Every structure is written in structure tokens, then in C-alpha cells.
Image (cartoon, rainbow, N blue to C red; front, side, top):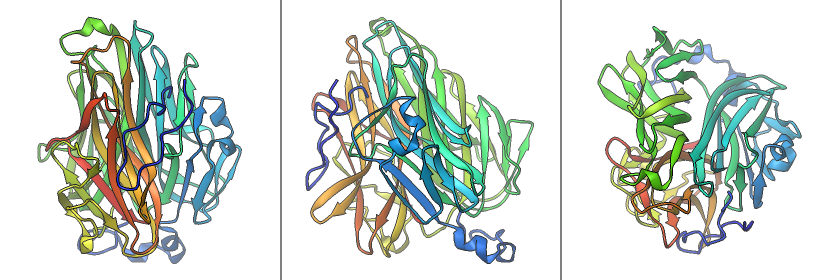
Length: 456
């Protein structure tokens, strides 16, 4: 299969990917919004580390199988950091201890009937992961999905953070290109907690932010503005999509809703699916009143759901914008903002302009919807002169010789990029698809498209 990567974007907006695209492929400040953080409890040395970060990506084109990710020096060709880590063949050796918010964004490419797992590891033990599987009699079927593994973990000096992948049949891999499709990033946060779940069962690390009741309900005790991020995978009923919710029992409202699945419509025998496991990831900024009761609610078509979510204090000055209608334009402008200090994000043209020089954590969440055999991608773009350069791209692709027009693939995933911006430099979002593809970034009030931007 062709090895060439997606071409660079044109000067105005991202084009559809060419035929040679990857085929095989809380920073809360104390105050009224966060009254519980007592500055006297934070020593000056710890305070100076908040926001320190690292960002590693792979910009070269090629395939990364499970043996190639064993040497981390061969995985990433560029790293930016605040002297918090150093890279060696085993991974990223931590130099500055702290509670790190971690993300691994990657394009997973899985062949039919292979089980493919991707993980973030600390000292060789998994601290977060996801998986993918397309069980089908048609062996030509394949999936290409960009997702992010999210984790919140206390790291000590000398700890080694690495990525791992495992392909049961040896036919699945990560795909990279000059669109920086594989990224491992992290930053030190002030307060937060991570919880694990399997179906409706929950467990959380010890924290004064939450308590766990009966192994199924998390009580978020303290009010404030929080980032809530969730990632994992869901096994689904044959040929039907499903919903997974992080649900607020107090208000009967969804905090995070995932919509995902391969729906074979009225012609299920054309693909002959046996089992489908799809990765998911999503993040949102929410204002919490206190004592919310959160639980995981898998949809009726979810056979098995596993993953984790973190709850991190967030600054009220960050940007968080959304849309509840499908996106079909190449350049994406989101009409609603729950946070947009100094109007840094334009709802008209979708451009964010950096108020000061620094590194900005950019997170884009959406539901990629593909009808039939096709491909769609979303790009986080940095404007350099008259050109738009991709910082990271997220793909969704389904291919099989037996695909019928009424087959619908929905994938709910996010992409993350830590972007260095000089004062006045701009970033925006774009999307594209193959000319033959029918698809869009789908959205509704329950499943909005979201863009969060935070200065580290």
C-alpha cells in the first residue's frame, strides 16, 4: 500500500486527503470560581511547576508496529519541553515530579479480525489505554481511527512514560505522516482525580475532590470549573451504534455523551460483522455546583465498556466553544462559547489569536460520521504567513469491498496538540474528505462539537 503521507494544506484551507493518504493505516486560581483551593497549602516550588509541560510528535511518514514502538527514540522525531523530561530509548524520563495530565493522540489502523490495543505506560505498567477490533467475514474490511488516550497520574522523578501497542495478528499498527498524527504530551496540573470504569462499576484514586458510593457513583464534592476528559473503548451489539454517558444523577443531565458505532442499517449481511470494538475519547469544560452524582451509563447496544475519566480544575479564562449542528464547511467556526475571555476566539471565522507568547493546549472533540466506504479528517491548523500548517489531524476511515451505501460509521473522538504561539499568531480548525466520501462532523445538542484552548 502507498506509504506517502497526506499532502500539506493549501494556503487557504485544508483540501481532501489525496488517494495516498494513510491507507494501511485545574488550574484553578483561588477565587469565587474555585474557592476551595487555599494558596497557603501550595508551596512556591510546587506552584512554579504548574503548566510546565512536554510535547513530542512524529512528523515522518510510515507505519509503527508493536516492535517499532519499543524504542521511543525511533518513535518521535521532535520534542518540546520545559526541561521536565528527557528522552531515551525506553521513553520519557521524568525530571520534574507532579500530577501530569497526559494524552496520546494516534491514528490506529486495524485489519479485519485483528485486536489492536494502544496504551500509555508508566515504568512498563499501563496507566491508560484503548482498543479496536473489527470482526468480519470479509477480510478486506479495515478501520482507520484517530483517537486519544487520556490519563491523569502522579509521576515521580525518574519515572519513565512510554507508549505501547499490541496487535493480536500482527496486522495492525499506528500510522504517521507530516500531519503529526502521533503525539504524546503532558502538563503538570494543580488538582484533579482519575477514575476507572468497567461498564457501570467505578473506582477512583483517593482525593478530596470526590467520594465513590457503592462502586457505581462518583460524588464531585467541590464547586468550580472543571475539565472532564474520558477515553476508552466499547464493544457493541452486532451492526448497531450505541451511546455511552457520564451522567449526572442529580440533574438528570449528561455531562459527557459518546455516540459511536458501525451501523449496518437494513443490509447487515453485506459485511457479516461478528464483533466490533471501537475507541472513544471526549473532553468538556463544565461548571460544577458541588455534590453532583456522576455515573457511567452504557447504551442498550453496548456489550462491554471500559475506560477512565479524569476531573481537573480549570481556569475560567480559557476558551471553550461549541456547535450543536453538523459541520460541513472546510474551515470550522463554532457559534457558541461558554468561555471566551477577551473574545480571543472569533465565532465568525473560527480563528483564535494568541494574546501572549506561550504554549497553548488545543483540544477538538467531534463525532466523525461516514456513509459507506469513505474517509473524513479534521485538522488543528496554525497560520504561518499565508499558509495553514497542520499541528495534528484526526481521521476516520472505513473500507471494505462489501460496504453498502446505508452503512454508517460514527466515531466520537478527540485530538490534542500543544501548540507554541507567539503573541498575535493564530490557530483554527479545518476538515476535509475524499471526493467520493459522504460524511460530516456530526453534532446535536447532546453531542456537540467542542474546541477547548488553554494557555499552559
